[in-house]
Length: 291
Length: 251
Image (cartoon, rainbow over all chains, first blue to last red; front, side):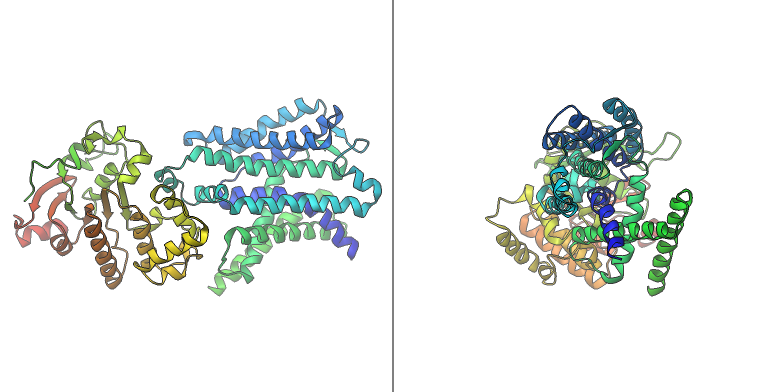
């Protein structure tokens, strides 16, 4: 049982920064930013490429994060003036990043197991030490995200999703705040890509496929669960983070449970999708019944 | 009676508006001046063009060049940031004037940037807000960490009024802002609005379809029908319409 839970945690941890990014764009910026799929891969790809070129792991991670943030600025730029909506802008950027990631990496995947990464010193000592480093890195990203969302910049981002027209009327620079928001979420996606590539030991240009949709499903699931015991959220950002954490955990719990049942991987996502629909519908029905 | 020697704060000149070339006029050749400390009532039934007129005045709609002037300057040439400090609007949907999923204190933080100087710390800021809101509704001062969305309709509208008048504007546009409230709450809100308008010497334009309200509060009344001003009633004057004509206008 413990090994089962640990196996879930090893999947949940690297997914958390991405899930927070998705939750921020979906719940707070009120935009479905599909570009997070591409930024996840870009983070992994840039990090892996720089490592293979002999760059130190910290510098490689920094440049990869910067790459993610730049994607956010680009997504925001495309939407400027409201000519292209956020969903389409995200899809277009993923489209562009599919090529760009392949150009950067030069081939479909790169093996990182023989290279010196951020966590290789820990894993060379013991598995526990390595996972401790991974946990620390993931929790630090989550903690700083929460801190950022509570700051003045975070408040401006939340207000943009809440009432952009009023924010503009109050004289705040809307486009700058939008850029900041999308940079933040894409940076989180890139950080997930960096961590994941080190855990799995390789960077692959198709590793981010469907991540955003998976994240949205997990977050919706988490929200339904948290609504059961938090009816009136006092701190919305904190509640969203909690919903995110619970949703991702339950999602991977379901995934691993299905794997344990020896379900053919061919039917895995389909079964999981149907299970999610069942959960969401049941939760919604019980909510409307209670009302 | 209005003294025409005083320079108008707002002037609307031959403003016409229609959604498409094939549709009818929503506003047709509307012209009027608003003078400092005026309380102008735009009286008309639903669809008479009152709200559209306010949208041109507060720049939610782009007006043709020189048709809407504020302090003698075409509103299109005034920056939104500067204009939003001088002209503020309160509508019946108070969510337009607030951030519904942010707390009262967070809303204040966003409003206070342009309006107030810096505070020493957050505690002083909270103290200021609690005292400020206490004058509007004592309940509000105890709900600083609650989301606006969790307030009642009356509390929301009172909070919206408080935030709008955090820095009193030169011109306040009230677009039937109490029409969604029950009579007692609407009356309390209106009294508070009037006392603040008087206290700060704010010029005001209020839209309504309530004839009694118009006669009670306004020093001038503009009667609108199908996008045209039918008549201007100045303070002390009796409107030219008979009861039957008024009935035809609104019912």
